[in-house]
Amino acid sequence: MESFFKLYDGIYYYFLIGGLFLSYLVYRIFHSVLGDINYIQTKLRIRGHSWRSIECNKSLPYNIYCTVCGKLMLPLVGLFCECCALSACKRCHVTIGKKIKCKPITWPSDRPFFHHWVNVGIPRGDDSIDNIEDCIKKFFCSWCQRTKLCPENSLNEREECDFQKYKNIIIPPPCVQVEKGEISSIKPLQDKNWEPFIIFANRKSGGNRGDEVLSIFKGLLNPMQVVDISSTAPESVLRWLPARCRVLVAGGDGTVAWILNTLLMASHVKAAVGILPLGTGNDLSRVLGWGATCASHLDAHAIIASLRRAQDQPLDRWKITIKPKRRRLGRLRADRVVYAYNYASIGVDAQVALDFHHARTQFLYRYANRTLNYMAYALLGATRAFDAGACGALERRVRVRADGARDALALPPLQALVALNIPSWGAGVDLWRMGNEGEVPEQSMNDGKIEVVGISSSFHIARLQCGLAEPYRFTQASRLRIDLEGSCAMQVDGEPWMQGPATIFMEHAGQSLMLRAAPADTD
Image (cartoon, rainbow, N blue to C red):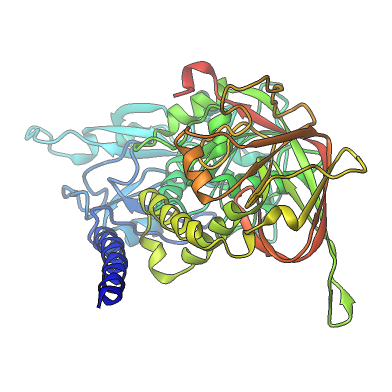
C-alpha cells in the first residue's frame, strides 16, 4: 500500500508539471489567434505593394484616412504599404495598388531618378475648401524621407531624389542590374563613404519578431536589401552582394553562424556583421554588446544609428573536421566539416539542445516565445539530470589531445566537454573565468586559441547558471584532437545532432569581421 501511494505521488507530480506547461501553451495559442496585430501580406514584386496593418510599423508615416475613399481607418482595418507608405482601407487597397506603383527596386541607369511622393496626411474639418485638390496635403518621399506640404496639383513629381538621410547605406535603384527578373549585380557608387546595409531575418522565427524586423527596414532601404532567409537562401544573395557592406543579422546564434558561413564563400566581399538578438541564448550578441535580447519596441532609425556607430571586431573561426570511424553498408562515411564561432561541445548540454530541437519541430511550437523556450530548456535539463543517457561516463569514451601532444588530457568524471571561443555559453555564463581560485589565463575571441572546459552533470550546469560553481578548466590550445568512442550528442553554436564514433579535429581557420556595439549602445 505504501508503494502504491509513492507511485501515486509521482504520477500526480508529473501531471501537475504537464498541466502547467499545457495551460501556458494553450494561453499562447489563444493569444496568437486573438492578437490585435492583423498581418495582411502580398507577394513582394518589383512594382507591387506589400500591405500591412497600420499599427504594425511605426518607422514610416502613413495616412490614417484611406487614399481612395477618404474614410478614417481604424488600426485593424487600415492598411499601408511597408515599402512606400501608401495607405488604403481593406476595400480599396487592391484598386489603388493597380493605379499607383510601389517604389521600384531597380531603375534605368541612363534616366534621372525622381522622388517617390506619397500622400500621408490631409487637413480635415475646413468647410471653406470647395475643391479637395486645392487643399494642402502632406507628402512623404519613401526614399529620402523628406516631407512636403503643398496642394496635390502643385506637386513637382519630376524632381530628382538624392536619398539625403540614408544615401550612404541605400543601394539606389539605378545601381541594381536585373537579368531575367532576378538581381544579377550591383554597380557600386563612386563614393568612399558608401557602405550599404543588408538585413537578414527569418520571417518565421522569434515569435513574429523576425517578421517585424523585415517590415520596419523595407521602407527605409531598398526592399531588395532586406532578405527573408525563410524564402530566400542567403547563398543566392552572394551573386550581387556589394564588395563593401554592413550586415545586420536578426536571429539567434545559429542564424548568425549560417550567415557567417555564407559570407565565408564570398572572399571578394568585406562585410562587417552586426546582430539583432532574437534567439534564446544569444551568446555572441552578449559579448559584442548587442544585448541578451532586443527591445520590446523596435525602432529602425535607432538600429541604423547603432550600426553606424559600431566598431569592427575580429572573431576567430574554427574549422571542425569530423572523421567517422564506423563503416555504413560496407562504406566509410564521408567526413563532415563545420565551422564554429561561439563554442562546440559533446555531452549533456548538447543532448538538452537536441531534445529542445526535437520539441520545437512539433506543431504547437509555432505559438512559443522566449519564455516558453526557457521553460522547455529547464524541464528538459531537469529530465537529463535523472537520465544522462549516452552522456554518462563521458571521460571513459573521449580522449583529448591539445596542440599535437602525445598524451591525452587527464579527465575527471564528466558528462560534457566544451571548447569555447567566446566568453559566453548557455545564455550568458562566462565558463572560463568563473570562480576566483588560482590564476586563470586571459580569454580572447581573436587570439587564435580555444579554451577547453568540462561539466560533470546537469546539476552542475544548473549551479553554473546560478553562479554557484565553476567548471573544470583543462587547457588553452590552437589545435584539438578528440577521439570519441560510442555515440553521443554534439553541438556547434547551438545546432545539435547525434554523433557516432569519430575522430574530431579542431583548428583555427581565419577570422570573421563582426561589429561591436559602441559603449553608448551597450545596454
